[in-house]
Length: 228
Picture (tube, rainbow, N blue to C red):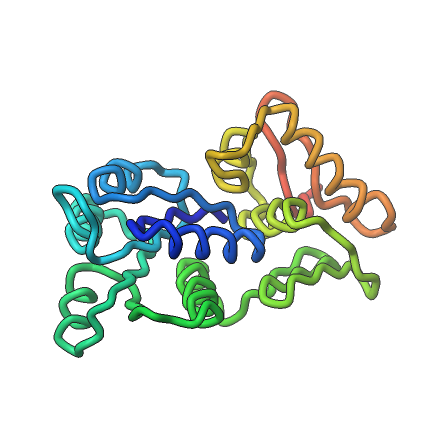
């Protein structure tokens, strides 16, 4: 999953980025309202963390309002030093999905991020399954059958994206946009390499159905294919 952080305090922004990347998210950061207003138009992001007070011609609430005005329903978490009930109501009424007052504990931020990313899937859990493969996004574990699978942080993010988007073709550009951030030196061949790593860990050692297949000229397909 790829997250955009719009926060003018560089220390806070870098701490959020570092912490989210440790949780296997791809994270980009911009530091003012004008750059934020431009960045949110990108379809590559799955969630936005936006500070309410930003330098520039627009603030966080105006950024979120602009998103909702064009029917962009992607989740947005508003950060603010204003924690009065009326301030919170104003932020939520602007279209924010959640509201977190500064200072905050990072564990709470992570919990809210997970909850917001869970909503579109209408799921009560962050556990994904495909055949006998099971991924737990909270505990960062992957098991096939009864055998744990050790994945690097980027491999885990790739498998998680596949499992959230089962039974449809996903091309390399989509993977590059959602699993890697703008700072990454990523090429299509890099995606192929990581897909190979993942296939060697979740498919090749097991006798069950193959879950990750290549559709030449189109991309990748994850899930048990219907052969009937």
